[in-house]
Length: 256
Image (tube, rainbow, N blue to C red):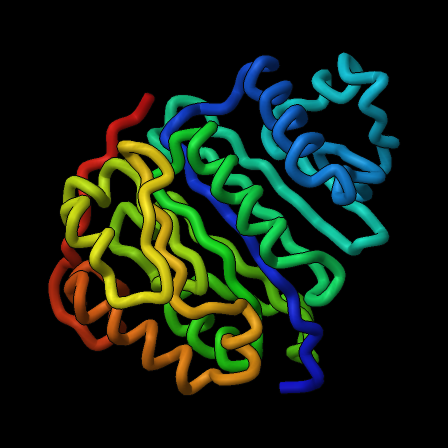
């Protein structure tokens, strides 16, 4: 593997379809209020992403609110994709954002993720850093894919199809929504062996494994131990394991 450019990824998966113009307006409003310095330069529905983004032309922006909706920014470097429920398929809407590591404050992204998870009733969410170690872990469980032959660029995402089989992994921050509160138990999640576990509302719990996102880069072995403790506490059968025979423990998802 060559010299990898480290990226920070945030994602939420919502049981809401998120297909309406009103949904698009809620997304843009949250973006403006929580991440004003990361509003896009350009948006669009395919490459190249070339429609100039302007909040004072919100109607024009919302005319583009359809699957998939992409957004990019040069400084701080950001790429975002919103994938609404498509057709009649029972699948989660997914909002994925990636940033060049060091360009943005991880605590600001974490706060944004908390707001997005509650507003869009996320079933699952995460904040992670794509280090060399995490790339290897993610390639094994399917959440990380190479973008070039040199092995210097990778993407991260958790799909609806994945979590309908099992949870691929836990991350620096993992957000558990209603299906997982029912499966694991609210009190069990709140007593998780992690740096922090707290309820965002009655239906959503956030678990932060270590004090700092930098721990993923500066202490990968310590982070791996914290991850293993949490998975053992919640029950290994809920998580991806290439060597496991049989099905994973998984929740029932309620589509809205």
